[in-house]
Length: 231
Image 1 (spheres, one colour):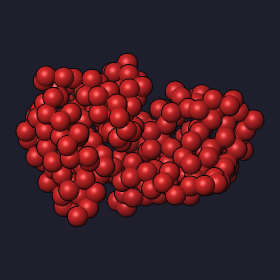
Image 2 (tube, rainbow, N blue to C red):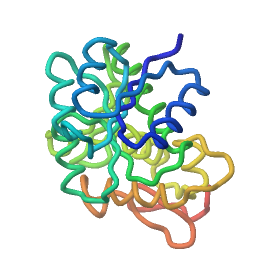
Image 3 (cartoon, rainbow, N blue to C red):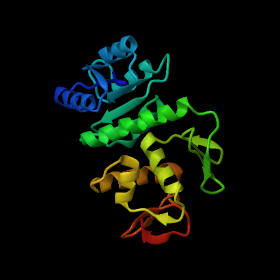
C-alpha cells in the first residue's frame, strides 16, 4: 500500500472528493468527520500525513492539531474556508506544516501533499546539507529544508520553500510563472498563475519585500541584477 493519509473534514462532499483523488494517486486514505474522531484515528491508525479542516465539530482543527502532535510530529496540511492570516499563523504555530484555503483544486491539494512528502524524505536521509546564501542575512539549507534569516529559523511551508529554492538556484535569472509552475508544482499547462503570486506574497511577508523581485510582464527573480529574458 501507499503512504497513509487521514482526512479530517466534516463536509462529506469535500471529504469524499479528497479521498477519491488521493486514492487515485496511490495513497491509502481514511476519513474522520469531527475533531474527536480525528484524534482517535490518528492515534490508532498512525497515518503518515493528516489533512485537517480548521472548522470542525467537537474540537476545532487547532486543538486537533495540538493533540495529534503531542507524542510525535505528524505532518499536517490544514484546510480553512477563511483567508484569515491570523488563523493561518496560529495553525502553523501549533504544528501545521502547510495550508490550503477553500475552495481549492484537487491538483493543488495533490501538489501540496507531494511537497510535504518530499520534505519528509529529505529530512529522513540528511546528514550534511547543501546550502545557498542569498545575501548576508538569508541562508537556505537545501537538503535539510530550513531557512535562516540573521541566524533565526524562518518557518516556510514546503511549497514556499520549494519556490524559494527554485528561484535561488537561478540567481539573477527571471523565471516566468509558467516555468515556476512547471518546476515547483509540476503543472505543464501553464494554469495557476495566481498560485505563484500568492506564494511570492507569503515569501515577502516572511523574509522581506525585497527578497523576490517582480519583473513586470515577465515573472520573478532573486538577486539585484536580473536578466530580463524570460526563462
